[in-house]
Amino acid sequence: MDLNRILVPIDGSKKSFEALDRAITLAGFTHGQVTAIHVIPHVLEGGTRTKAFDKQLQDEGKILLQKAAKRAGNKNVKFTTKLLRGSPSHVTLHTAKSGKFDHIVMSTTGAGSASNDMIGSVSNYILHKSKIPVYLIK
Image 1 (cartoon, one colour):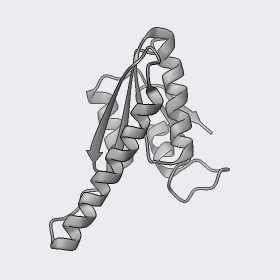
Image 2 (tube, one colour):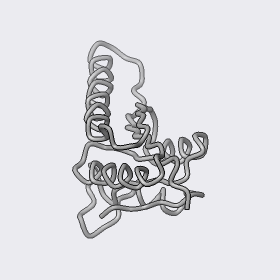
Image 3 (tube, helix red, strand yellow):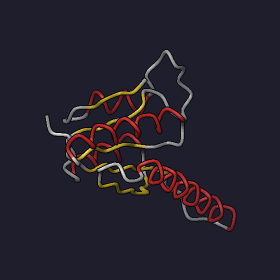
């Protein structure tokens, strides 16, 4: 089983960072690469408030990805981050395919409203539509 290129969507939840930790451990066995992504929504152009909201989304996303990079540290893995726009489920699948990733590692629930006993809508969609193995961390 190749664990050379692992994609990890991060939404800022504790569980998404647990998934990141697991991906880093798995990639460490093969000196592989982990890419953490954070997806923010498209914000329609508008006035000052809209621009401020968009900047806030970008700034918060960058902070999350910096936190992720700090967690990766020096653990025998190449680590990269990407701040992307769109629907988290669609962008994750597109990134996995276009980036030729071997696996997706993600939490079953994150910042959405699903309870701990449920699988979240994003992870459910990715699990059913992904062409590569998906590891769900509960």
